[in-house]
Image (cartoon, rainbow, N blue to C red; front, side, top):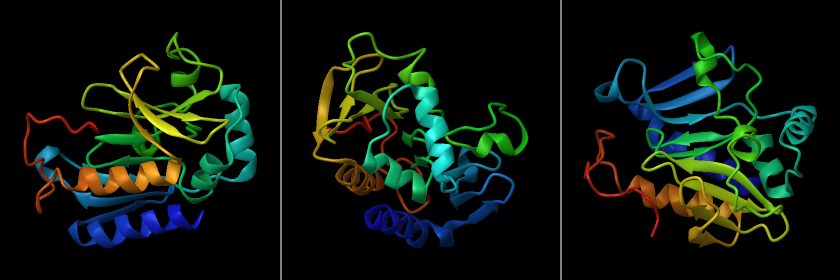
Amino acid sequence: MERYQALIRKIELDYKDKGYKFIRSVGTHLYGSTPHKGKDTWHNEVFRPLKEDEIETLQAQVGMTIPAALRELYLVADGLRLFSDELAVYGFRPQMGRSGDNVWQPYSLVEPNTLERPEDASADELFVGGYSFDGSLVKLNIKTGSVAATRPRSAKEFARWPNLAAFLDGEYSRLKGHFNGKLELIDQVRSTLPG
């Protein structure tokens, strides 16, 4: 849990001076205002910590075991949207509406593991996030704890990390390098995917 807390502190230290907003009704912290992208847009969104009973509800909705590493993250933050949504970590979405403060909730963990689950996925793979560049997914192996980036609508891997904390730390550092001091993409054409 400490590595996830350290990541949240790093986001706060790196971006709070560029703008900060707290959405009390849903418990979301927004860091790094990005007015060049539109009204009320943010570079990083950190969602409220979950309670154990919410994690249990999410696990029942997904129909799969939520492994310890993901549980630990959820006790710190119910998912993330990083670098103007270049990378998202899915979570528990208690309100499905997309209006008002409901927009400041994570993408749901449920759909990519049920209705939109890749056909070639094994029973041990939990899809926990995605990249906006092309819709690539992020999967967590519930037996080994390893994390991999996969092609859109597929379980075919193109990048791998030993665990969730290494994935988040590595991708945070890598993606940060794609943006300038004004929180704009340095190269609008270049892929922001790993590898």
